[in-house]
Image (cartoon, rainbow, N blue to C red; front, side, top):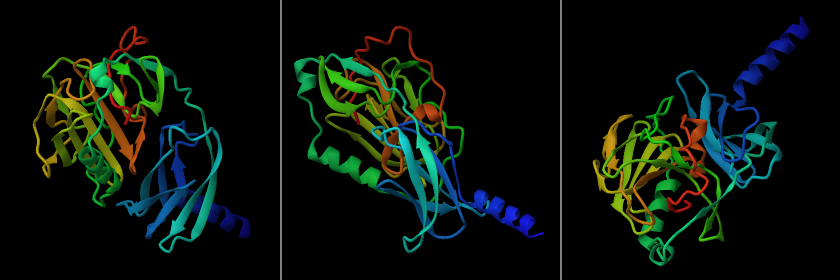
Length: 280
């Protein structure tokens, strides 16, 4: 009887504290589950909030950074006072990111984000709203194929930048509509210097997305959108050498690989891509 009780207790504990996927790649996100109580989770120096869910558990999105070294790490669950109440080991696997050279003319090479642009994007990424608007599956914003994947280490005109591509580039004709990948709130709808026409959406509970180089907007700041709503139109504004869409998916303020959430096919012969997007 004692053994049966112990097994039941262990089973209940495993269901209360869990995460997926079991072996994440660099740049992916962990879906972290915990007890229905105020708390958080920590991986390395990153701490995320866990939100109560209708099923009686709590849930949060823990990003595994692109630059995280492959290896074994400890994921910790914390109570409302920040004390560790449970921990489990996980193994981060290599994503084998490639290198990619982008050819930019002198004007584009000198283009940088203004202080106002940096401040607006930083404030957007620093905000985590409690209400959840999104559900799975997410939908790609445009039907075009991939011209540049997530995580590639960027070179500009053959010179290393020390940065990586934090989103996806998709092919699309100028003026084609761009759709919201999930429901959410428009936090940014502005023409920026580096990013060009930019729309940023807060989907709630740590999930956010941003869409760059737009030619014009279909939404305004503060507006609520549904999944699939048109939010703007493909352009080539900012640091861009041709019409395309660059979009980034964020979990708890850090870029993550959208291909963990949506299925997209690479364009033929993408080894010599010329689409220029800001790394972040």
